[in-house]
Length: 184
Ligand SMILES: [Fe+2]
Ligand SMILES: [Fe+2]
Image (cartoon, rainbow, N blue to C red):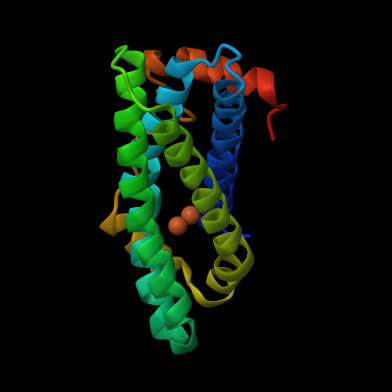
């Protein structure tokens, strides 16, 4: 397996882990059982920043190359590209609500609930679809030169949560990730 594919899959596992953490807090929120809003905010802030800006942007470039190799992938790839836009918009909305909650702004509970539930379902389905239908095809069809072009188009930014230069603001989130699951 190429390093690019391994990195791609590792990032998907990271995002899935964050969605699990978010879901645990959403369950606590629904049960009125002391949800950690700050943690929810950190998860969504990260997801709104790193994956949207780098992971999805790189996929957009890789997908364009995939379509050139296999035109039959066009409908699926168009759907995934649209989902990247929807994930970004849904993340922005959820982030806004969570910021309001953290700032003690009165906000309808159902709005937070719906935005969080939609985000979780939609994001997980997106990851599963890529893992099942796109990553294996990319592994077959994309060359080392393709991946070089992808990385050149979207230079990899430093990952503020899982990377070497983790930002202090994510210290608590890193601790929760370590507590929640053994490292893979
Ligand atoms: Fe994607
Ligand atoms: Fe992805």
